[in-house]
Length: 231
Image 1 (cartoon, rainbow, N blue to C red):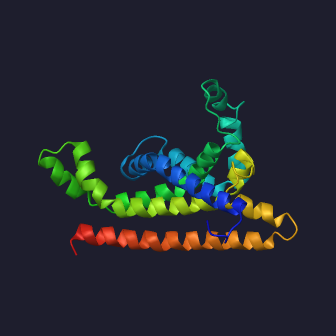
Image 2: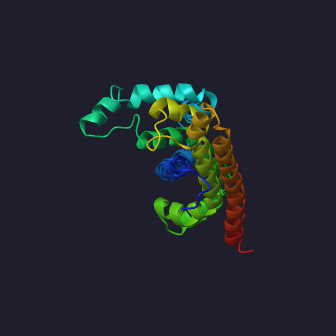
């Protein structure tokens, strides 16, 4: 293993990548569903759902983390029942996944929703008139057309999850090797003497990941769009 980083730094980087990947993967199906509902359906309570989806962007992250603790902590409304079957989220890396997914979810939904709204409904209707069922139309027509938005939303969600701090440290604390993600490690190093160098290295990693995510999302979205258009 290269000695660019200390073992604690490597653990924080690896855990952040693990948490971000899981947060993106587990929230993607729900993100596609919610984005499609918000873009295409009219129903009572739509604005309430839209508000709830975007609430983590408005609330202070610490408040979101506290609400997660009240809900999914071992004594929480949901957490007490999960605890009965051996599922513990608070102060575990799985809880960091939940916190990161909640904070990144609005960005994912927003990107996918814009992509759904850009699809010409007449294309889907034409496929339906040829006898295709709604699920088949979605799988073969809608899904390929919104793929650029899915890619952008997923990459942005991953980058947001990598940088999540407030909700994560409130819900799962800052336990080295267990729940200490990249932002938490930066915070911890800044609290000790002579920790500036370690903090700076991790800041550079965070900047690199964020920039790489933005470049990758733009490149992937354009590549998929060109392939769909046949250019």
